[in-house]
Image 1 (cartoon, one colour):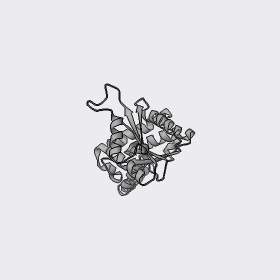
Image 2 (spheres, one colour):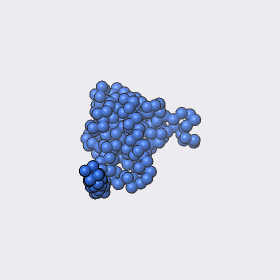
Image 3 (tube, rainbow, N blue to C red):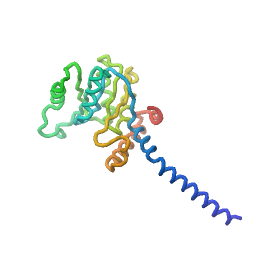
Image 4 (cartoon, one colour):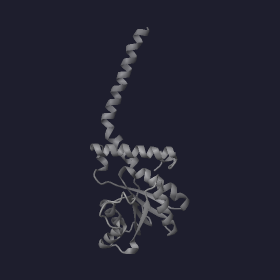
Length: 221
């Protein structure tokens, strides 16, 4: 009796494995799209300002989207966040970068009262430090809502860091991801983007473990 049951269990296991493989082959695109949407959540809405998430060098694509939101009157002001590099890490032969950004924005037709440039230190945890400084300044200027323009799969971690800081300040944060070198609906087709996804997922988990963002961020956008 015992020997007759062993092949039966193996057959059941093989049947289950076959069904699982077929399911994955038929639905892997849907699963991967949902995985991409998880780390790059997006919501629509209007706000007082749009924040271009901090970086050492601001991406042109982010600027275009930010100006587009400003032109469509979805926001009233563009906020550009620049990470301040140490003296040794500062790019060679680059002049005052925030001043250069300001000049270029004016050259694109923006008036000085339409944008604000905020420089933040690159102190760890970088994203949380940025959120605290930026939202503190905006709160003092009466801002109650913001669209957060974040790059790709960094969006969920950045959004929840800003959201946690914004809650006690009464500032609503709306996530808005942008993508530079790939399309969101086929992100898994590029090996470097796969590495980036895993990297951002690990950083997101790290923020969860350290308590920088709440566990409920896993289930709630």
